[in-house]
Image 1 (cartoon, rainbow over the protein chains, first blue to last red):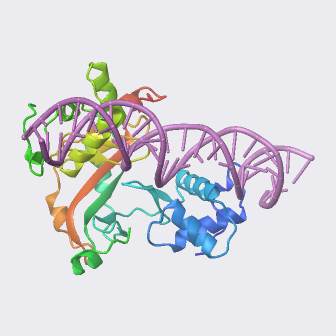
Image 2: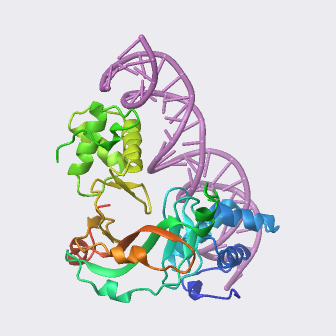
Image 3: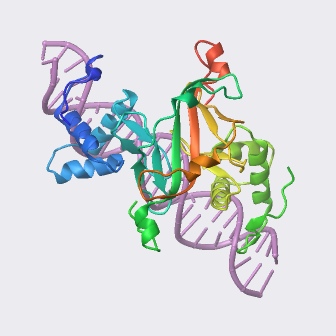
Length: 142
Length: 142
DNA sequence: GTCAATGCAAATGGTTTGCAAGCTC
DNA sequence: GAGCTTGCAAACCATTTGCATTGAC
């Protein structure tokens, strides 16, 4: 997917080589990488960039909703796919998989017990992925 | 809720004063405290305990399913209520509220796209809590 | 030319760990 | 008494930040 100016153009966003690289890498990587993984992939490709910049860029993208931060045990992971979707997390190897099941908008209209205003929801399934169910021991991908 | 021996009794679990205190505090606190908050509450009560022990105990409880760890931005938080239930997180003040809506078991039987084995799911709503919708500025509870 | 972005290294914050002493079983 | 648990401090890891320099607009 071509990376071009985006809505971040607002408020003095400068489109540097590093930012282009980070967003491009994130859109390519399907495995919900950590900042460190994005950094390693870029360095392996020969790009000149610092880890601090990767962190700064990923956070900025998440703040601008160009990426999504996923929290769990260990390092934060990032998802370059911004459309609403759910995740499956393998509790054996830690892999995170994007799910194709439809987003349930109706949930955002639910009357939750308290006097709260719902803006959205996150649904995450946990279990064992195909690879880990197969090999009894389970891989240890991370 | 009275704290008595629990299933941790297995594998040489020793029921120390500190462990009793941590579990008791966690069951009392409704606000999904961080390890640090549990520690402070216990010290304020005059209990003698170290922060390292609070961390070790909370992790042990979570591993044994006597507590649940909640991940998000910032420090990990813990929930002493072990029955299946969902959460609402206020994106303004950070407050986490337990929801009364029923757990959707049927979701755990869904055919997710991949060849995965589902063991459970987590559903978290995001939005503004009553306190923050009221005061336009929003409280900043944490 | 201006001011945001970068790189580096140091600082931070949350959490874990090594080890000697204390306590539960 | 054996060995799990504690407390302390140091170690650790992920992430952030200060500051001088670089580079986008």
